[in-house]
Length: 390
Image (cartoon, rainbow, N blue to C red; front, side, top):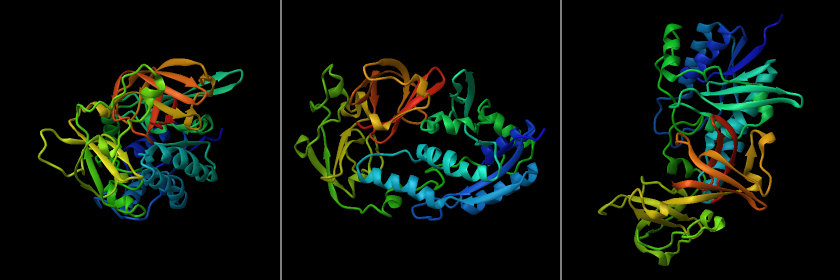
């Protein structure tokens, strides 16, 4: 019987290298495919994770494992579908997550198309997550599960994939802990066994964000306004719509304490880059107004206007990985919620109304950022996600 072919997205990192090894060990016909998604080095903080190094390590791993190695340039779809989206969101005063978009639009879409050109039956990545398939009379249902390593679980980054994409996806290291992955790489004498994990924007690298964004977004001076901790702008209500709404800041809400170089370069909860000292407590961004180019800040990690009890997701921005479990208007259900990568799961209730989905948390949540993704879990299964509107 002909072996099933798996094309592995091999990146030069230890995770994808061990993923390829695991698949070969399991008896698959394994092919390594390296994707180049970015050419520009504007804003990069370090040249230690260059394209040339990534390709070199990828080729060395493929050679060691005795698997075919190919390379594909996906920089055009990556710029159009990930980076242009990133610029557009920042310009609008929202903070996107390019890694989530990269998985939905590139790794499990454009890259998968290239993999199928190589006669792939499956597409594999080095993500720390798991897949389980349930066979039903109405067709297979694919469950996306958290990785076994609680410190490395990357299911959040896949919160926008769909059933079709999951049907051909494999996650060979999802059952492993990171130290086990390193140990396997050392045992197999893979060249990248002790190579540092990549950081920063997916396939771009670790960047100085304002410098990177200035490729398309102009720096422009504006006021920094401090909102006193005792200012009564917080919502004291049981009304769900009011609880989820953005706080209403205005120039009259506080005092001008300095200047910034572009409100669209900042995000709620950010501390770095404000560059104003001499306060009893550190300053944090508590709001931005990109139209008026105003940055609102407040003292202290626990400033009352840094936290909210609810958030809102528009109907068009809600995505169900499990369509069979989707809630209809008028329904509500308890979920575990994550509003950013590596955040501990939070208890919350999804409440669906005609205008969209509200999430009401059991506890106040710090730095609920518009443009980010909220992911919804039942136990360790990722069920749905949505773009936070406010």
